[in-house]
Image 1: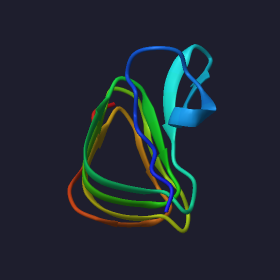
Image 2 (image 1 turned 90 degrees about the vertical axis):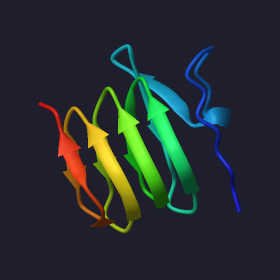
Image 3 (image 1 turned 90 degrees about the horizontal axis):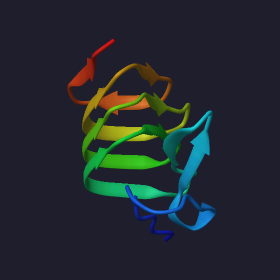
Image 4 (image 1 turned 120 degrees about the vertical axis):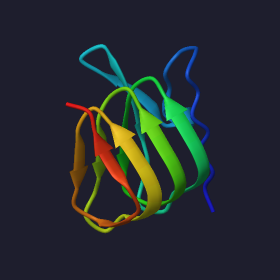
Length: 92
């Protein structure tokens, strides 16, 4: 099982799952990745694996087709293509 760690500070790298697009931070999960717990992040999240718990971000949340989410989701914009259980809040 792969474990990714979100790092809010420091240099973006492929090792921690954080990338930059148009100068904005994005945390990206692959299909085999699992996030359990709470993620509060200054950027956007792309979930293409399994998420359980709570995800609150300043940017967008993209739940990919095939992803499984049992979590509270809160972001600027939220796109749901996978299976989602739990409250969803889109601020914009």
